[in-house]
Figure (cartoon, rainbow, N blue to C red):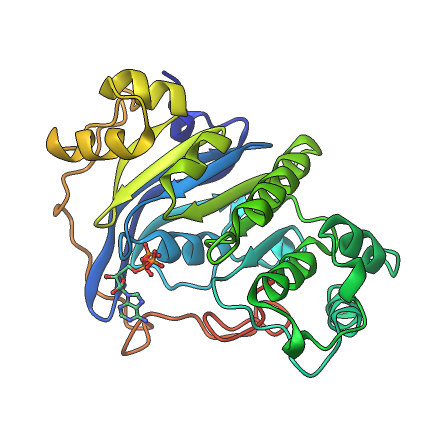
Length: 295
Ligand SMILES: Nc1ncnc2c1ncn2[C@@H]1O[C@H](COP(=O)(O)OP(=O)(O)OP(=O)(O)O)[C@@H](O)[C@H]1O
């Protein structure tokens, strides 16, 4: 099986031996992985397994203790990536007192995207019937789509989406996954987190996480074959029973570091509580309180 983490070419994101502490506790402890270009990669794992922390690290809004993260060949969070990487957080934080169109027009200007982009993303996210409504009057699912629309402004090459389908009905979930697929078909790379294991089958590759560790980095078919199971949920349980991590796809010359080896000291520049990076890397982008479309 291919180990995407080691395929230096064709990877949009390469994470190597990443250590992150939050609240003084090791949350990611030596994580290495890669996200292939033009693919939809599902980031799955139970609540608290570190999915959001990994995504925050990849978009450059999380202080990391050690390790490296390369996005499109550049260090995560570096200035040239601001218009090339979009981040949609779990919490919608578009402006409630502006209409859909006003929100998108605002973010469009901040990003320096072409004016025609507003209509393009409205159409792509199927928001045409609510463009003149205040965002505060929309349903949760609609607000989420406004966030996604904002993230699509400027046609970012990498989209990092934190649980974008939470709270959506099955029809909307299917529509959203169809949109993700069309974005990938157009060449975008998508990293999409989810609790919902049955969404895994819509992904080109899966990263299964538990307790800040990677249990698997494989295709759905590869994962099912390796675990001898029929569905991803059972495969996940099987990996836990087997005492994973023992990644099937990892190459022998890249041994996985022992879980508690080389625990780094917390760097001096970490914020006291959490290791948040200050806002300011992109328009309205604080780590957890800014607009969810973060560049
Ligand atoms: N601001 C914070 N301060 C301290 N610890 C935090 C903070 N945010 C998250 N953590 C801890 O980091 C760990 C990983 O959290 P994270 O949000 O990355 O997990 P997750 O897999 O995204 O969870 P969920 O699916 O519930 O969103 C958890 O143990 C969590 O309690």
